Image (cartoon, rainbow, N blue to C red; front, top):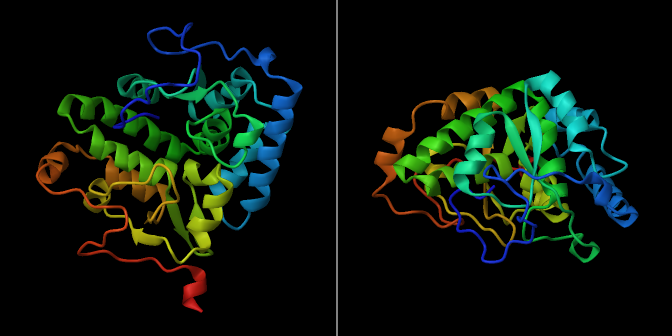
Length: 284
C-alpha cells in the first residue's frame, strides 16, 4: 500500500518484469529452505501472541489459508478466496503506485509483495514483505464484510486521486486496515494488519497505557497524521465491520471539501470530541 505517501527512493523489489499493473510471477520455487524456515518462525511467533488479542474473524480465517508450514502459493490460496468472497491475490515486487493499488482493490485483487525479509529483519522491516502482506491482510479477505470494505476503499481511492485527496484517504487505510482495533464484549481486539504482523505492536496496542484508543469518528481520523517508524500514539476503535462499512460507504467529496482548510493533527494531539476507549486493565 502506497496511498498518499511518497515512493521511497530505493524500492527493494525487482520491478524489471512488472507490467503496467505491476503484477509479477510469484516464482514460488525460488524460495529457499531458509525462507520457509524463517516464514515458520514468523508465523509461530505471531500465532502465539494473537489469541485473546486478535479479532475472531482473523483467527478463524487464518487457518483457512493453510500457510503455517511454508511461504504460501498465491494461486492456491486465491482459489479458496474466490470461492469465499470473490477475491484473489496477485504478486507484486513491493510498493506500487496509488492508482494501481486502488485499481486492484476495486477489482477484488489484493497485491502481495513476493519477497521475504532477511533473518536480521525478523522483528522490524521498513517495507512491507510477503509476511506482512499475506499474514496481516489475507485472512480477513475471507470475511465478506471486510472484503466488501476493501473493495469500496479501492473504488474510493480512484476517486480520491481525481480529487487530490490522497492524504486523507491514506489516513483511513492506515487507521483501519493497518492499525485498526475492534471493540467486542470480551474487550479490544486487533484487526489491523500492521499490528497483526508485528510482534511488538500487538502488545503495545492492547496493553500499553502510552497509546490512546479513540472511538472512530471519520472527520477526526481523516485529519490525524500517523507514525511510520514507531508504534502508534493513537488507535481508532470501531464497533463492527458492518458499522465501518456504513460509516465509510458514502461519497467523500463533501467530506474532503469540509476538511480541506482544516489543519492536520499530530498523532498524539487531542481534539474536541475525543472519546477514549479504556483498556480492560483500566476498568478494574
